[in-house]
Amino acid sequence: MTCAINYAPQLRAQGLRMTPQRMAILHVLHHAGGHLSPTQVYKQARKEFPSLTEPTVYRTLEDLAEKKLLLAAHIGNGKIVYELAEGQHHHLICHQCGKTIQVEHTPFKTLYRQLESLTGYKLDSSHVTFFGLCSDCQS
Image (cartoon, rainbow, N blue to C red):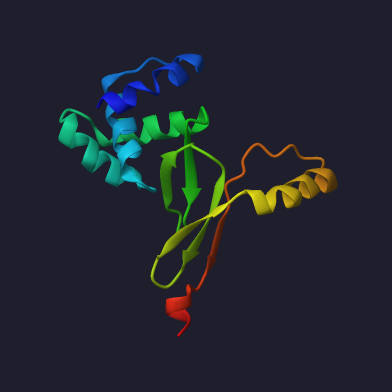
């Protein structure tokens, strides 16, 4: 779980310490290569840290997302998935087969500035999920 140690400075900067629970969760997300549900994180992290409880995973994921170390994405039907906050991007999700692809944030920068200008809001999140039909499901 040495990869999770890399996140210790970020945790300390947020006033948090690197606990074994946080280390196990960050390790799982670091190696996931995508988004995981809290249940998926729990099941994988328990392999390394058997005494980890599911409520602890949920609480830790929420805390780390609040501190901007993780991104929480709403993928429909009230489901939330988490990933490490490593670069701004968005998602396209096929509502038929569930295929998910990432879309870079760059094309959306102008839109975000326009939204801020029109509404007076200062946007602090740039994570959007779009739903539709992928090319395979359209046929």
